[in-house]
Length: 348
Image (tube, rainbow, N blue to C red; front, top):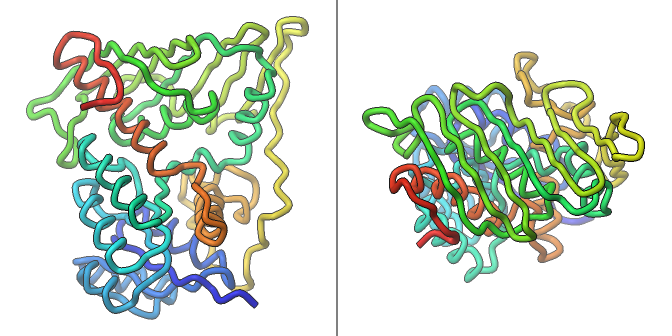
């Protein structure tokens, strides 16, 4: 039997619940070994919920003592680069970092560089890529179900640097991750223009993008946006839309028929069943369980893929390099709004 990989979680705030549950749900492939948080109340509460054997106040101390194979980074975004560097130095083989990846393009690029230099698999917490509906939609687009994509519209309520990076990352995934070329952006900034230590719009932001393959995209975000992770694609032969919090979650129509066709979730027989005694996810998790059955929970699937990537030496579908591009999409919009001019990618 394969020796389980040991996992540890940095940060015991809200999103850590999904990471701790996800690693626990992958037994016996993964052994949940430790967690760290400066708050004694937070780390003790998570330890009690998930039976975490070891808890620590300092992430560096935990990594040095426990030497985990897998590390989830759920700490504030301004700490992500430091936590990645600590995890790499401790010998981690795979890192799952929550979004936003960082608060500057320079920090994101350095996180990618450090992991690539050490042969560490870095993945970003863009679990919408792992959702089975979205995986099937991406496959259909690549198979030409709507012909050549021409135009895309993405809408996401909430700040673009936080929730909006999810939406733009999903858009790029469904389109096959085309390179970003330029953006023209407008945003209403607060005073100061920050969210949790980083740049953010106050009420609304809009970006008009050019992507490789002659694709244009309109991205609407901010608190004034009317939907959440809503994506609409127009191609030479049809349309495709994704609405994760509605039913159907994904659908398409071809011009010769015009009626919308439901996109069923991708069938993946390699998803292991939940282990006996796995703790349940909370009942008040609006939007977290986006696929039927907790065994197909997107958090669980992104962690399962990281395990496979570490074992097989391959890149994750939400790799650090792809995540960096999705972060730059938002930072570029903000910079364009500040300059009142077009901004080209990659950011310098």
